[in-house]
Length: 366
Image 1 (cartoon, rainbow, N blue to C red):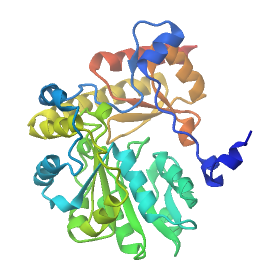
Image 2: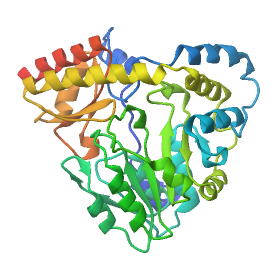
Image 3: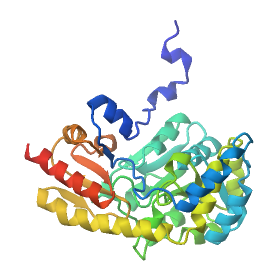
């Protein structure tokens, strides 16, 4: 029998499989619980827009047909919503697929990538996939360190990743710093700016990324319908970039990659005038609740611009995770990001937030 080294490329063995947040049903089965809440995967607790649910029902009978591979109607609606040219858009089955498109179309063996060490895990994965070296750079006070990131850029650098707001810390990089990156990058290097949580941000100095697209800079801006629009289960992400870049990405995009149901649900979400506002309001209320309650438990919480909070529980995060799980509360451990005493907690509904605080208080008293 062949061993794993003979079955695949050597670089594949360096990839650590992505481990998602535990599903509710799995926790119920494993622990025999009836009531479980999930605050682990940064999902919108309000769920999809009622208009999206209606659109899903209306198009359900058409699933025997292949979807529009070009996402024409969604492309037109989203371009109008963002004020960009339709050719500046490319769609993926979630933002993850856009990341893989960038890797497979742009990275050659021997190229290099640059990213922060405590950030979204898939960037390092795609570098390993393409047999490239990923430079992982430490954060500065939980914020991505722009000078340090730039210090690792060289003639072999092809992609530099900035997640803004950062996952898992929820911190942002001011636009002047992002612009500094764009001005410093060599011509062969592209800034991959992950703005998956941008609708939640209330910092006025946050982003002008679409201006950079219109200026034909070397930039890919990633956004998604999974977060504030509550469509995580349908997998519809998108990127905005200059046409010369979207043309490259289109060459590796899988045909029919975004389902017809996902396209119609996303279109309907854009037509709901209150979807973003009500989700932002729930998130604002949740953050204020956490800021008030968590310090009283003797833990530290990092101010966030996203829909999750980064908490230093000052003890082994795996132990805290396990004890919370026994109480029917699923969170995300920080060890996967190299932070052994941190947990990441998605902001939930008011009752869910209170339940988490009660459970964490019990665990920390043990």
